Image 1 (cartoon, rainbow, N blue to C red):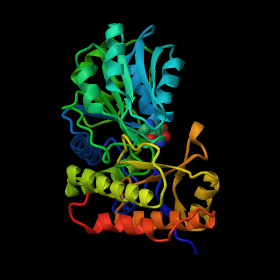
Image 2 (cartoon, protein in one colour):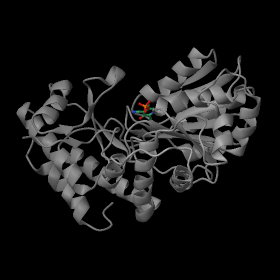
Image 3 (cartoon, rainbow, N blue to C red):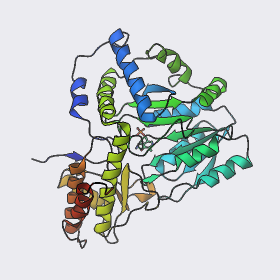
Image 4 (cartoon, protein in one colour):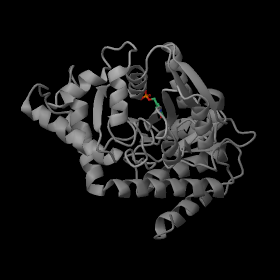
Length: 382
Ligand code: PMP
C-alpha cells in the first residue's frame, strides 16, 4: 500500500467537508436553494479577494478566465502590456496574439519579479495602451510580483490592471481594492481548496466602463451576461453545481480561520520549506521575491531533476511539481497551498531528503526537517 500526498500548486488537496457535499444528489440551479448558495459564495469570495467589486464566476479552469479578461476588455487594434516572467505571463501574450491584440512585452528573467518602473515607463511612452496583464504569483518560477506598486502606477493611466492571482490567492496577499486591481482572476483548484473547474473574476468600476465599450468577439465568457444574471444570483448557463457546493464549504473554512490567518499560515509553511531547502544546501530559484504559494528549488548539479520528482512520487507517494518550459528538469516546485498544514510539508521535506540521498546528493538526513521544525515550533519565528 502507498499513501498519496499532493504538494503541487494546483490541483491542491480538498478538505473532507468539501468532498462530502459533492457526493450529494444533484440539485437544480434555477431554484431558490441554489441561488442562496451562489449568493453566499459570491459574498464569501469578496472577503478572500478583499474587494467590494462584483465577482463573476465561470465554469472553466483559470485560463478560460484569462481569455475572458482579454475579450471583455479589449477591442481590435488595442495594445496591452504583458509581463512575461514565466509560463503564465507568457500565456497572456499568447491569448493577446490569438485575438490580434498587440502585446508590448516586458520580459523578466525567470526567477525575478518585474520592476514596476518598467511598467510605468511603458505606460508613459504610449498613452494609448489599454491594459496591463501581470501575475501575482508566477507559479512556474515561485516569484511573487509587487502588485501594490504596479497598482499605484496603473491607476494613473487609462490602462486596466489585470492580475492573474490564480495560484496566489489565499497564499500571497492581494488587496484588490486598496491596490487598485481592476480585474483579479482566480480559480478553484488552488488556494480555494476546491477541485478544478471554476474560475472567478473581480471587476472594478473602471473595468466595468471599459467592458461597455470593448468590441472583441465573445459569447460564453460574456461579462455583461454574467453580471446581469449575478444580480439575481443566477447564471446564464448551467453552472457546475457540485463544485459550487464544495466551494461554499471551502470558503466557510477560510472565513472561520480568517483570511489574514490563512495568509499567515501560508507564510509560515513557506518559510519552513525555504529554511529546509537552505539547510539542505539547495538553492531557491527566486530568492529575491519568494512567493508564499510555491517554492521553486534549483536541482543541484549532477542530479537528474525528472528522476528526483519521479522517486518522490513513485517511491514515497508525494506528488510535487517539476519545472515547466525552459525550466523542465532544472527545478522542482513544492507547493504550500490551500488545505495544508505543518505535517504535509514535513512529509514533503522528508521525501525530498530521502530521494536526494538515493540519487547520490550529499545530504544529512533530517537536516531539512530540523530547520522546518525549528520554524514550526518557535512562536513568532515566521
Ligand atoms: N496562471 C497561473 C499563475 C497558474 O498557476 C495557472 C495554473 N497552474 C494558470 C494560470 C492556468 O490555470 P488553469 O490550468 O486553471 O487553466
